[in-house]
Picture (cartoon, rainbow, N blue to C red):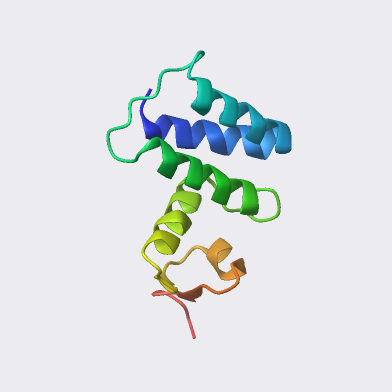
Amino acid sequence: VNEFVMIELMHMLIKRRGKNGYKMIQQILEKQTIIKVKFDIVTKDQLLGILNKLNSFGHTTSIGGRDASILFSIEKHKGTELISNDKAFTKINGLVTHNPISEN
């Protein structure tokens, strides 16, 4: 599978299984005995970074797999601002979110 499928799997397992889902994904990525991941766009370490973002925010916010990959990228590039209509990002401390279609 590729990394996008893994991000969706990470999302599902963390949302449904919580900490156990996080541990399951860590094991899958570390051992790759059940699923072989083909890294086309991100590295294994970057995918683990996305997993950690999802684990940090996925239990208490509506942050999902794709959102976690955005947060990981922002952190990697030392960003502090994001243009998005997604209200989930407004819950992230230290991130300034600009809503392009806000009525204000």
